[in-house]
Structure formats: structure tokens, C-alpha cells
Image (cartoon, rainbow, N blue to C red):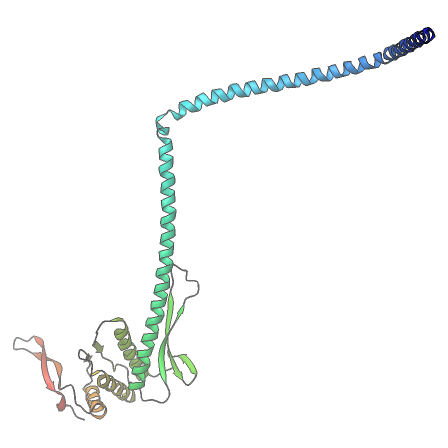
Length: 306
């Protein structure tokens, strides 16, 4: 055992010597590396000083901005305390509410306009169809020519008319078979007058309530004999066709008594009647005082020659 203890002490002494030698070597290495480490530390210190300078500059800028912001805040508070900004929140709320209501009103008006515009177009189409139906019926009853089967009013929207300013062009077309052409400049004077009367009757029936009165002032002006007879025939057929209407009255103002006689003749042939019973003749007579006066006298329709 004694030998063993001696051996152990010797080993411990050897280990201490090795450890001491290792520490000496580390110290020598640190001494060799120390100069380079100090240079690095100087560089790091210089960088840190530069960063510190930048941070201090930024801090100064932030302090200046903060000071300016505080001053601006105080200025704005004073402005908000002025009379023009009194109750500004409530006024802003009221204006926003007003804008919202205006937008809703504009939307409602736009929808109303669209509905009204659609209704007007539907009404226009329906009325034009009704007018043309009446025109077709009256024309087939009154006109006895072979060159025109029917007439109709044709409407078309003008090019360039907008939604708010919709305009229509109207023209009277005559048809023969499948051919349809504009009536203007392509028909006789008698056909034109008869078409005018038929269209007026159709418009009155379509748009007026129980309208039965129509007046013609000198309908035979610029008409030759065949056209006068044609117009008399058409009017006689209209009178015969409308005689069932209780409030129908046709007032004709004319200088042509032969035209009235022709209507009477057509009425006898068409309606088997000589209505009306009489007509009124307006003449001019000279009074004793030298003045001229109009004289209205009732004349029996039978006095007219057939």
C-alpha cells in the first residue's frame, strides 16, 4: 500500500506539471493575440461612437419634431376654438346626412324617370296601334279606289335624341299589297284630304273621351271635280258609318253647294237616307242704312239638286 500511495503522489505531481505547462502556453498565445484584438476593439469603439452620433442626431430631430408638433397642436386647438369651427362635429354629421339623403333622392328620381319613360313608350306604342287600327277601319269603309289598300301613321325616333329629349318623326304611309311607301307627294289631292279627315277622326276617337264633333273649313279648296266627288263619297261613308254614334256631328263650311249636294246624293245611295234635313246658308245683304250685314237662313236639304 505504501508503494501504491507513493506512486499516486508522483502521478499527481506529473499532472500538475502538465497543467502548469498548458497554462503557460495559453498565456503566451493570448499575449500574441492581444495586439490584434485591441486594434479590433478600437475599430469597434469608433463604429460605436459613429452610431452614437447618428442616434443623437436622430434624437435631436425627433425632439425638434415633437416640439413643432406640440406647437402645431396648440395652434390647431386655438383654431378649433374659433367661431367658424363651433359645433363642427354636428355640422359635419348634418352635411353627411344631407349628402346621403340627396344621393337617395337622386336614385329615386332616376328610377322614377325610368319607370315613367317606360310607361310613356308603352302608352305611345299602344295608342299608335289603336290609331292605326281605327284609320285602317275608316279607310276601308270610305275609300273605294283600287290603288291604296290602307294607310297608317309610322313613327320613328329621331337620330341623336337622348333619353331626356326623345323626339319622334311621323309620316303617313300608304300600302298596296306588301308595298309601303310615303304618302307625301304620291297621292292625289282628294286622297290627301280624305286621309287627313280619317286621321283626325282616328286621333279624336283614340285620345278624346266621347269626342264626336269635327269641323271642315273649305275642304274642297284646290280640288278638281273627280276629287270633289271622291271626297263627297268618303264623307258620306264616314257619316253613314258614324251615324250610330249619338254625339257625332260633322260641320262643313264651304262655298261649294254642289259639294253638299254630292254628299247628299252619296248619303242616299250609301245610307239610304237624306240626312241632314237642312243646312244653313250665310249670305250678305245690304241694309237701308247702306251697311252690309250677314244673313243666316235655314235651307231644306231637298232644295239642293241631285
